[in-house]
Structures are given as structure tokens and as C-alpha cells.
Image (cartoon, rainbow, N blue to C red; front, side, top):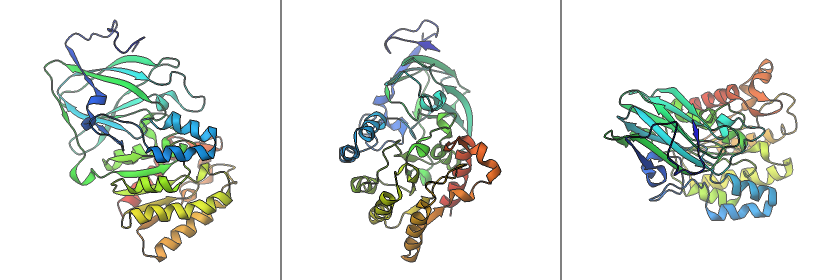
Amino acid sequence: MEYLTSINNPLNKINEINIQYLNIFNNPSLVFGNTLNSDKVDFCKYSQEVQDDMVQFGQFVNNAMQHFKTASCGCRIRFRTTSRRLVFKVEFKRSAYFQDIAGWNAFGFEIFIVDSKGQYTHHRLMAPQDGFRIFADQVPLPPNSAVCIFLPNFNTILNMRMGIERGSRITKFPYPKNKRTPILFYGGSIAQGASASKSGNSYPNIVSRNLNQDIINLSIKHCCKATDNTAKFIGSLDCDSIVIDYSQEVPNEEIFAKTYERFYKNVRAHHPDKKIILLTTPSFNRWKEYESFDDIIIKTYEKAIARGENTLLLNQKELFDKKEYDLIAIENNQFTDYGMYKIANKLCELLKK
């Protein structure tokens, strides 16, 4: 790896002779998981109306929206190439690691090779050291590779160039035809990927790999406020199914009771036939405060079933035994890889029904 003062710096440690660069932002057909792409890549997750909604919740929430709205969680770069080597130049918005999020997760690019059957094999993990914002790295590839790169979950990519060997080819690598309509995730820090060891191990990303299907991850830490404009925005997006998992970050039961069923109904009104999966509160050791929230979630689910709606429930407390608590979470919040894996596997089971 090589650290730079400008993304335009020539490289000293990495040989870039005969390397031709693509500006990722000029190639939206290679980038998956965004909602606002046009002729340029746009990592912003939400419309201006949803962003403006956050002001009413105070400066802390509004600052979180402004900081994380362009984080690339859930986004992927996919392509086929005959190049035997890739050279990356990346410029981030943030240089300092987070105290409670692994660097390989917040800043990491996890690279997978995808075989002809849609099976993913981890190939390389790439992330700068703490304190560095601009860097370059190179990755060797097997011949004629199909590549899927899971992008950082908690940082904003300001500039990214990907170099291939001159004379080699790079082509589009879409999902299979029946897997191109994305699964949509709406949640908070857990669904964004907090406490996963690396970027590819958030549970939405694991679901994407296991099903070999496109996803959109609208989850933003501290910003899952379930506003009417958020439901309207979700309603404007074409999706295969929807996963709702934001109970952990609601401040109290009174607010949750006023907003949860209303939000579900608003989303359902826009997507009357889509499968919607509701997750109960997460199950952590010594986690008592939000157990009453489950009654609200379960009642919302039961009413939906009574109306004949295509709604499923994932009870997270049924996924783990008490002896597993020290494996699934960091202290009393945020799932580890093991917890993410268990949730993803259950979601895949429900999504296949």
C-alpha cells in the first residue's frame, strides 16, 4: 500500500506503467446499491426531503445524516476483466478510525471472486491505516475474473480510480436476471454493519452474497426516524422485498408506539404486494430496555397477517441461545460477525419462502 497527498500523485512503490485508469464515478453501470445514480455515481442514500426531516430531531441526528448519508454501505463494484492486476487509488472524506468500528469495516474494500455458479470466494481486503485519507494499492487477479467489491460501510468515497493492464478488457457483470431487483434494508447502526470485522460482513451484504442478489441498504446510524418522507422515498424505489430493522435506536416505547405501525403502513401502501420482513429487537446479554418494543412489532405483524398482507416476522431472540451471548455482540450492543451471519442466514430462509 502507498499513501498519497493527492490522488493525482504518481506512484513510487506500485508499478503503474501500462496501467490505464477508470474513474469509478464516471462508470455507474459498474456500481450497485445506490438510489440516486444517473450518468454519474452518487452515493447519497436519501432525497433532500428525508435529509431535511432530520433537523427536527436535533443537531446530533442531523449531523449524523450529513456525515453518513454518502457512506457507501451496501454498495458494490462488479465487473469482469481479463487484467491480471488491479491498481486502486482512493480518496476518502474521513481519515481517523472510529473508536467502536473496525477499520476493515468502516474503511475496508472486501474483494470477492465470483464463480460461474454465483459462489463468492474472499480474495483480498484493502484498507488504509488509521489517519490516512488518500492511498493506493494493487491486487493480483486470477485469469478472466468476475469480481465483486463490497465498499466501506462508514466512510465516504470522494474519488476512486481503478487501473487495469493496458490492452486488457473490463465488462459489465450484472446480477442474474431474476436477482436484479434489489432487496431493500432500512435500519440503524446494526444494519449499516457496526461491529462487523470487515465491510462484507454486515448482514445485508452477507444476504447479497448468499442469494447472489442486488441490495439497497438505506441504514444510517442514529437516523432511522421512520418519517413519512422516508416511507415515501422507500415507496419510490423498485425493490424485490423490504427488511425493516430499526427498533434498537428509538429512544423510548412511547415514540416507538406512535411511529412503528404508522411507518409500516405507509411503506406497505406504496408496496402493497412486496414481501416485508419485520425484525424484533436484537437480543444482547443484559439487554432489557427494549423488550417491550417486541409487543409493538409483533402486534403490527399480526394485524398485517390478518389483513392478508405479505409480511413475515424474524424474532431475533429465537436465533441465539444464552450461551452464545458472548459470541454475538460487543458488550451489550452491536452484532459481531457471528451475530450478523445468523441473522443473514435466517433472512435468506425467509426471503426464499
